Length: 256
Image (tube, rainbow, N blue to C red; front, side, top):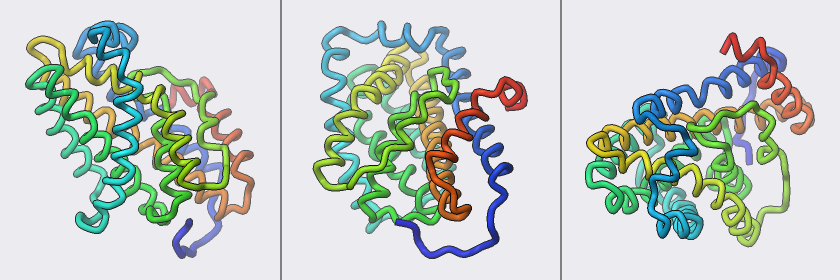
């Protein structure tokens, strides 16, 4: 649901160019995290004990379900926060989670997931969408389907932005179940980074900063594209295809 808004018609080509650059830059902090830790995104998962890896899907699905309820409910108690403040909050939580190794990192994970979702909702509101709307809440969960800040992405995997279905409680739960395995891999990398000897607290702070920045950027891309389709009276799938082409353009890779 889009809140009331008025303004001049957008320059769609310029807007898409800006969104493509934003998308390409989103994972930049994640690369710095990998350099800090000295490992690859794939290698990080191998640091986790097998019993943790085997239940990450269930833990993540539970964390997402809880986050959906808690993040939305928090809007009645805590006012909307600017992007930088959400990053500061999750960064401090990541440091605390990494300080005690894997047990504290696991305990911190659902709290961070909630704050991340709330940050995505704040971005939706910034672009004029009502976070109380079920369709917007659905879109907020879908932002978590992005690859994550530690993975290289050529923009071909933006399909999660495009599907439109009737939103009910059942479809939201179905989406959470679909997104959870993918997010579990992403959060597993975060957990592993927080267990790096000596660097645990630093890595926890760095990964949480990277994750918050990344998902905020993905949310800006997602909701700006939705709004652009409305303002420019253009089909959203058409704009999405144009954006994918721009992201994959080698010239943009150099410029970004």
